[in-house]
Image (tube, rainbow over all chains, first blue to last red; front, top):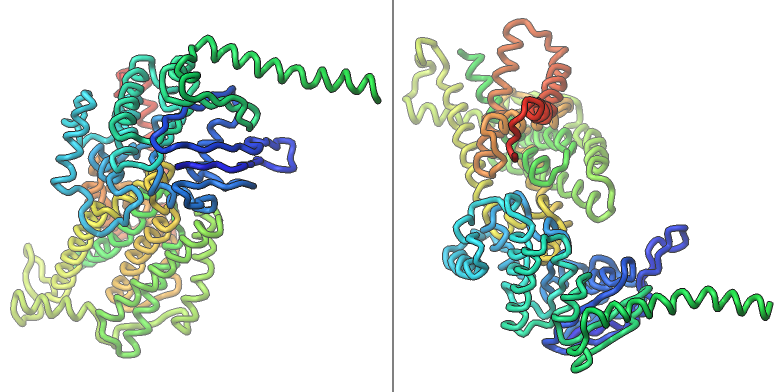
Length: 270
Length: 312
């Protein structure tokens, strides 16, 4: 379904701010798999997601969806295959446009936009029906500007917008990190529901060890721009938040070992 | 009375400019200075074609399209070459000054001797009220020609506003608005934001040039200086309009921009009538726009100081 082959990306190359965000990432996603990505701050997990979404182009490597090479496709072209929910609840919706306008915009994701009226009765009714299932009462507020909604409501709508046309791939970039615990639970619940119902191939970045342990059927740990752990199947199912924290510690210890080891080698052999 | 009719007509003509500036300024959040050049371009192209004997409707349309082309170029400078939007506009405006001179051949083209759209206004008046030259309006004697032109302009502005409103409710139009509101979001929904900006600036400057084309015909000449400072006029109209309708929602904002343009023109006409030195006009306009821009924030901070915020 999704193939990332030897992805490399360096930001600000040749300057003191040089960041080698991706250093040869390699993985393959099966159809309808729900993959969780975790990693420390600056490990490159969000960069990885953005690389797949097309926010920037890779320095080296390849990205394929359904066998199609999309490495040089701009963001808006990939959108035909990819639905996205962002970390920032402000990123996924147009604040000065109404709920209805935002939703009908999403109903044309990746399709040609004509000079026909955007809000057609049948479409709006169908959207209202779906919004009602969120249980937030938003179906009665279609004429309100989205900017007046809370972060949780916006994320729920963004999720609905990203999945209204079934995407080949759903990208969730810490989409509950900016929410209060209650809203986060609600959005996670909705995520679970829609991913299961539509059998979506999903890539989800998270900071929450609880989410990492309880969601998805595969888990990838990223560190310093590389994949350092990859659990699937029964191994993934057995993972508990504490196990993940232990893994983090282990990765960090290996890190600390490197400079000391180098120092020791130098003192001995140079 | 004639002064009032003239001011109303010019106000309505400039409301097309205001609509153009509204698109760039409020929908895309860009102060697109191309307007200064494209207004003149519209006037110049139309004037030259009229002098060559082209049908007035075609000449006006050509003027409008020339402005759209200029806006498109500004958009391309901005999106394809990554030049800052303000600078793209300045570049285009500067280039247009020479282009306008080149189009016109000299700095001023009188149009009083050629048939143009104002004659259509006169015909409209004759159709409605008969063949007399003058009529009484609220106790004043006015020429039917002036009335006809005013009505025709009003009808045209209304039609443009309605078309614009419905355009911004279409699939393409909503995508354009979303581009200005949240480019990240609409890219993720598969829209090429660069194309939207190019198209939007074309639309914006097409309206501005249309305004210039009509203005040249109404005042009876095209002048290479006629566009200078027009962006400020447009912004002033949009802001006055917003303070009148007190919302940024689409339909009302469009109506507001038109009302703002007419009101602004009337205020200036009154000020000039009561002895304002025309040399000070641009200074007064600039000061006025300054206050219009800062007053909402100023009022907000005052409101906060006196307690009782809106979001408490």
